[in-house]
Length: 243
Image (cartoon, rainbow, N blue to C red; front, side, top):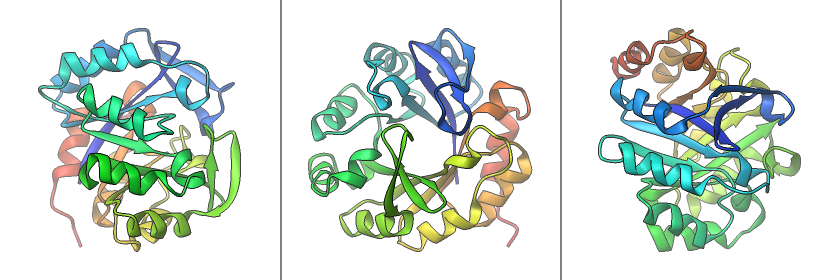
C-alpha cells in the first residue's frame, strides 16, 4: 500500500482542520515547500496536497503548489486535490507536474466531469475523493452534506473509468481516532483502489489499512505532532500483510 503524507495549504501556510471545519484550524508551518522537502528527504514516494482556499472558494495556492512540484517533483509524486471543479483545472494541475488530480465536489454534482477528466488525462491520473458524513457525500469543502450515498457515488465513478478513490469519514478527520476501515472496504467493493483518509494516528492504524487490503492511507496531524515518524510509517505500509 502507498502512504501519503498530507500537506493542506490555506493562505499559503500548512494547516490541519478538525472535522473539516475552517474555524478549527491548527497551523503547522509557514512554508509548505520546506515541509514537502522534509517528507521527500524522509523517503515519501507520494505527497497528498490539498488547496483548501480553492476548496472553500477563497482564492487558491497555485503558486505554492507549483513551487512544491518544482522542488520535489523529481523524487516524489504529488496528488493534488481541493476545488478541482473543472476539466481545465485538472489539466492545469497535471500540466504543472502533478501526478494525480483529485476530483471531489464536482464528481458528486456534475455527472459529465468524471468521464471528461478520464478521457482528457487518463484513468491513472484522475482520482475521486469521496468525503462522507454518516454515509452521505459532503461537498463544497465539507460545508454541505448532499443526499448522495457514498457507495452509490463510488460505483458510479468506477463505471466512468476511475481506478482510485480517496475516502474520508469527515467525523474522524484530524481527530486521531483511527480511520474508517469498514467504510473504506465498502467503497472498495466498487472495484477501485481505496485510499483511507482521516483519523490515522498510530502504526496500528497503518497496519489495519494494510491488512484490510486497501490501496493506501493519508496521514497528516499525527506526523506534524510527532505521534508518528514518517520513516517508521513508511516501513509499516510496505510490510507484508499479516492475513
